[in-house]
Amino acid sequence: MRATARLVALGLLATLHGVSLHAEDSYPGKPIRYLVPYTNGGLADTSARSFGQYLQEKIGQPVVIDNRPGASQAIALELAAKAAPDGYTLVYGTQSGLIFLTASRKSLPYDPIKDFASIGTMFSAFFYLVVHPSLPVKTVPDLVAYAKANPGKLSFGSNGVGSGQHLAMELFRMRTGIDMVHIPYKGSAFSMVALITGQIQLMFEGAGSVPHMRSGKIKGLATSSAQRSPSAPDLPTVSEAGVTGYEMSTWLGLSTQAAVPRPIIERLNHEVGEWLRLPSTREKLAAQSLDPMPGTPEEMAERIRNEIPTWTKVMRAAGIEPE
Image 1 (spheres, rainbow, N blue to C red):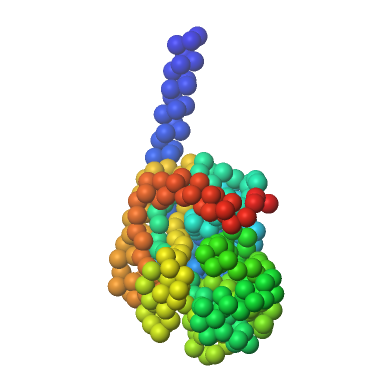
Image 2 (tube, rainbow, N blue to C red):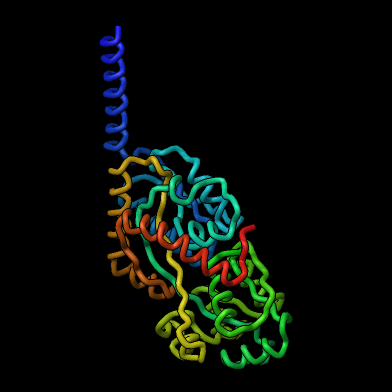
């Protein structure tokens, strides 16, 4: 009986293995859902649509962009974590969502390490320090002086508690000793409207702020990067403007459900790398102040494991406790 049971078990395993191999060999055989934890029209959404169009042409299957903003990216990440492990559900695996959010919450409906498979990093982004035109400041030192003379009276926006924009400002506050009020929003589109209409006075924001700076709807004071931006070369870096050593950028990658077979992960990683190598992609990313950041699945996974404790320490030093 034991021998018979063993043979049945081995046969079942062989059958399941054969099904798995067949699924991998036939991938992709249906549309792919690409979860984007940001509102439509923002920088990350635009890049997702660019990669989605490229992937669609390469694999011969539709790539459907599914915008699921809110809860500081937790909504989209939970959907991805609980999706079928077949490679047909992708999600932006970002520093903001997988690391900053993890450090700012007491609990999440998923494990940022165990429930996701890293496909690879895609690009990194810096921020612009922008203010409402009514604020009587022209430079970073002006802003610091004004904020110190008016403690707690300025409000700044972000994409949510623990987001890249939030931490960029918290780091700025730590380095300058200023006191301001944080107003979190669902996404860049909402926080930008709040800044333009004067509901908030300042924030750190990505390349989507450049057109509004050029139109005069907002004022740019500096960039969070180590070097000046080609899109706004007249703006100094925050460090150049007097906050010595200040630098802040965030990265975005591609993730999927943890149990997706390795061959599918490797196929998707290859496509990300090919997309990033295209001259047209590099040109588009440069126009959005984004730097290509190709990498292996292992490199992205290691980055996540290392950065969670690092940024947790930064948040606690800034007084940001888990909610």
